[in-house]
Length: 354
Length: 96
Image (cartoon, rainbow over all chains, first blue to last red; front, top):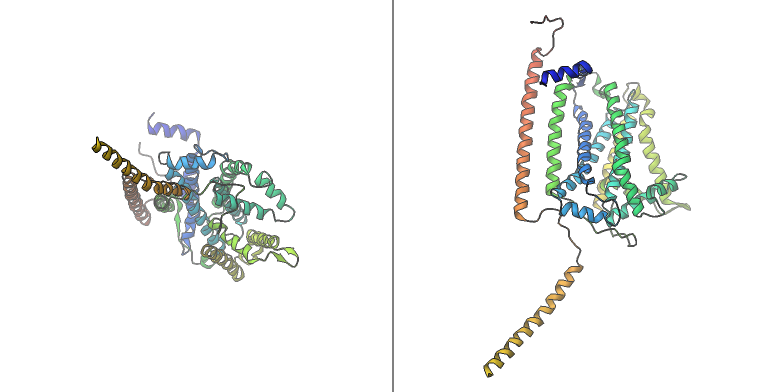
């Protein structure tokens, strides 16, 4: 069948002309904050890269506590290109979460969450939480002593939440303490539950972005008169950025392949100077600020409650920022956005250096 | 006969010397086993490493080449768009 006949065959059955005209109509505003439009697409690309490398690794990884660590060593040392895929998956995750944070804080600072895009913000927030849980569950699959201690601390911290903490802790661990059952559970989350939720929320997030169109920051709304077509102009620029990102991920993966730590021993004491992954460092540092006992109450529990309230406020910002919803400048929420961004960056740096 | 005896004694002496020197080395090797096991996370042979770095350079050449092609294509599209000849006219008669 020739190409033209194949094209006709599909055209008779599906409305490709409708998709084509939709793509032609879609435009992207041109202004000085335009670079932020590319962070969403870049995050999506890095997620796709994670899916591909993750699928390859899943062929060889054994999610059983006796075999998990050994299977990773075998992937890295015995499989052809195994070290590269593991390194790509590791660095791809770090960079994807980094770009995701840039996307979130960028959206927060230019107030792209304002009416009528509140649901886009909420779906984005859910995707951020999913990504962080992806990171934690993937880290634990290494079954090394650092990952083991990190998951023990993280699930223990979640257990400090009032009312639901105990349930979350036992649900995540699968038993009283972190054990082999936790590994199976985290594996199921990492390769099945979280990918399904991710696909659903990425679909919804993308669909809503198409429905509402691209948001223009209030400060440049009046001056923005120029628009460029998404297809092909913006898509080509997206491709260029994705290619550069791919090159960077591959280069870092080749030059700095991640080490494999000592196999986890549930009965051993946690290693000294243990630190969580970089995207948990701000939480880790915040917890350190609180003393163990505050007026007879558990300090860690108070810290967890305050952090949860801070995160809840972050989620509900579009509903509190009434001025932006009316299209007026909202200085207070600009400062709140700067405060959140600065707190995250400073605490991460302090956590990294100390 | 005397020569043979002397040679044997000398050989035994030599062997004992080697044995005495090798015992500490044996312990040294055993101590090394207690050191943290380092797993090779990157191919260790110089040939493999050369191939990998060479492939990385070729990979970047490919990426740069693709970027250049996309840039040229984008420039051409923008040129056509600025001329305003990219839009399809409505009710254009078909030339059969």
